[in-house]
Structures are given as C-alpha cells and as structure tokens.
Image 1 (tube, rainbow, N blue to C red):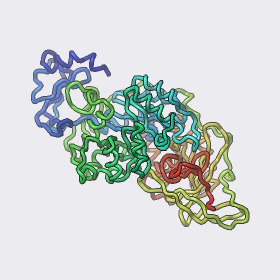
Image 2: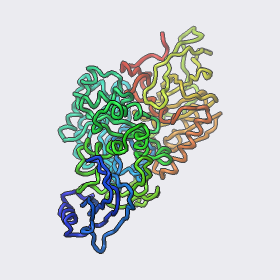
Image 3: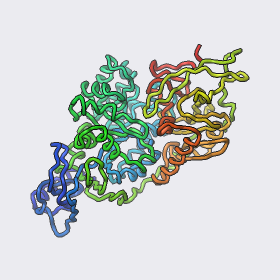
Image 4: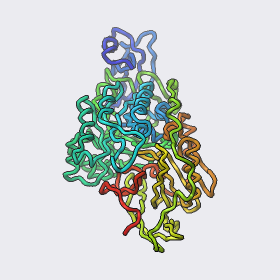
Length: 595
C-alpha cells in the first residue's frame, strides 16, 4: 500500500476534477462514522487505493477509464476493524485467516501473535509480521509482551525480553505492544514489564492491556498508571465503566466462546456513557466460527441485537479502533485521504456483506473472495515442534494418593460456559490401589499438561469439571494458551495416552479419542498451532472435532476454546501449567490434594 505522501497530489487532483478517479461508486447511502449519520445519494471517488472525493456528485472525477460501481442506494460503510485478536486461534495462517474474513467485511485487524512467540520466539513473530504485510487488507501486528505470561508459573518454548520489544518497535508493521497479561507484574512495578511498556511508548505506539481481575480498586489504578491503554478482559458493566473512566478503551469481545458484549454494552445503551471509548473485537475465533458465522460482522450484529444503535456499533468497529491506534487518518472511515476500505450492504441491522472493497479493489462479493492468495510459505523449521521424549503410557497419568487414604479431597478446575475465567472447585474423589480416581457421575475427569518444547518428559496431572464427558474418551490439543504445551483431558488414561501420542506423531493439533479409536483430528503442523490449508478445510475438520466432543457427552458451547485456555495462568481462578496447579487469584502454585 503506497503511503499517503506518495499519492497526495493525485488525490487532490481527482477531488478537484483535474484528473480522473480509478473508481467511482455512485448513488450510495454514505455512513459517516465521524458525524454518525447516513447521507443518501452520495458518490465516492477512489484513486491509488485511497478515497479522494466523497460528495453528492462525482461526475467531475470520471474519465474514460474510470470504473463505475452503482451502489443502487445501498449503504456504504467503512471496512470493519478487529481491535484485538489472535490469528492462531483460528488455527490458520495469516493468509488463510485473511481469506476467511475478507468476505465478511473485515479489512483491518490488529493481531497479537503471542501464541507463536511462545513456541518460536522473536523469529516466529517476524514471520507473522512479514506474512501480514503481504495481505490485500490491513493486518497490523502488536509485539507480544508476555512470554511467559506469568514468569515463575510456567515454562515457554521461548521468552520475550525488553530488548526484543525494542527491536520489534522498529519493524514497519508493528503497531504497538500486545496485551500486557502480567498485570500483577505491572501493578507491582516489575522492571521488565515497565521496560517493555517504556520501549513501546518511546516509539509512540499503543500498549495493549489485559486486566483479568474483578478488583477495580487501587490495583486497577496502578495497572492503568503503568501504561496499558485498552482492555478486553471485562465481563461486567462495571468493568467497562471503570476502564473508560480511567482513560482506557473498553474492548468488548465476542469470540467463539467469549460472550462479553451483552453484559458490558449497557454502559452505553443504558448508562449513557460516551461510546467513543468503546471498541468491538473478537479476541479468539476458531475457523468454524469464521466460515460458518462470520467475523466482525457477527460482532456488530450482536451488539445491535443487544440494543446498540447500528451507527454506534459501526463506530465501535471502525473509527473508534482506528483512533485508538493513531490511524484515524489512514483507516476507519470513508473520508478523503483514507485507505479505500468499504462495504456495500442493503441493511444496517442484519448487515449482509454484499461487496467488499479493500485499498480500492473489489476483494469479495456475495461471500466469494476475488483477490489472489499472497505468495508466502512458512519455513520447514516452523513445523515439527512437538518435542516429546517418547510415547506416553497410561501410567503417565497416574495420580498417587497420600499413603493410607481411601478417598481424598482434591482441587478441581471448574468451567464457566462462554467465559474465559474458571472456578476453583473441590471434590471428594475415590482412591483405588493407591491412585486417585475420577468421578464420571459428578462430571470430574482428569486433565494433564504434557511438556512439548524441550522433551523433558514432564506430565502434570489434575482434575477438571464441566465438560460433561460420559464415555471412555480423551481430547488433546497442542493449542494451550499461552505456553502451548499439550493439554489432555479424558475419562480414561489409556485414551489420554493415545491422544497425546497421536499429536506427537502428526506434529500438533487437536484429536478426539473415544473407546481407544480416533474419531476426529485437526492437524496443525505450523508450531503446533496453525494449518496452511484453506480455511474451509480446517473448519470442516474443526466441525468434526466439535461434533466428536459432543459425541463424548460434552454440552459446553464451543468447548474447544475453553479447553485451549486451561493453561492460561493469568486468568482466574484455577489453571494448570508445566510447573503444577496454579491459583490465579494469588498468582502462586497450589497443591492438588486439599489438606
């Protein structure tokens, strides 16, 4: 994409009528997100991938070679922006993710590749950065801030340092610092965290936030004082209000499993807060959601269904996001000088995405993508990253009971449907032959974290409740935010071993085993996180995986997303890591057996 300064004279000449536009879109209803109004009977002229003229009549911009698009009275809205997201959660490369979301009207994404950073380090971030720059839409990259997310509580494949952050700030497509998940570190003045934030602010870029705590007292104020400028971890109305009152942007997310818009948007729709400080985002969407349900168009529709005025919802997915990242002169609106990213739609509430224009080119129409696939390939050494010492046996998942006990009281990770936090539960469990058993009748099965970066052979075992598995089965995944070891959940240890060994063999992904047989497999060969197969193929495999989990008795909505976050030791209350069970309310390891 050519810089504005390179084409400014051309834009001026077209707007003044001294030179012809490349494209003119006629007779549309201009959705102006600056003034929050719809202006009918508007023409838009485009030159060199940017808007040149927006007004009642663009006849003076039309030359013999100008392409004319008749909007037919349809609404012309800015291309949608996702203010916070992780490409890897789609199980796709940047290229395939972009090709999945372009037909849904997403033309700008702000991506934090901290999943790849945990597995491949700074080099992985650079590969993601370079692939992002090859896309036909705007894919801005935030430099990951926390690998590990909580030092001392997990071991990652690579660590990110303040020196890495400072280096990345000079890369051309780095827009800021990724979510600062180590919020206790910021609150306590950790020099490493503050150095990363300082390097970002000295570069004049935006610091992403992640405050996963209900405490809105002095600790929250300390976090804001430390520099993070936004936060997407709110789940309550008071969370959204507190963030904007302290000068942050409240990012309201609707991902595949995170439904946090409805509970927070009332801060605008009922409390009447200024919507300029609110941004819509997805955070995590798997490929099935992208292919079957949509992307940012899905989030905007949901916000409208929750009572938000359609024009305000569109502002939250366009100009608010652009302004937050200092890009309102580049993207986020249909106004002269900005990148020509636009959607034609016949209805502002149901938001059918009928035509998508990015950088002045029609890139999708009626759900079909029309642009070419960029020529980018991940290198071979980004594959084969599941490093296990050897195949596991069922005995690797044994949990020894204290001597002489017939039963124990154990800590159990409790799932919370449609939210990222878990509950710290306890359950009385039987002891048989000196080993602590599961309790399928009470929906308590086993969870294990298998180390997969350094082939240590380490396996940490614990218990989890809420998935509803009621047959002999196991589900394993090498997507295990954020350290991305391997999480195995099962009701049967032999099946757990089969699941883990299957992922070792294929180089990463997700597998479902039932009664000793593989019934679903999603192969993710790149860093054990992503596939470079087309999104529809990956989505089909993911759909089979979701159906297989249900076949095993699982009733949770998008249970795989919940599964993949069980090692995220910065979100309360109870998590598992390669170092043991973690109490995230205290940020310390805790014993599995109570008392």
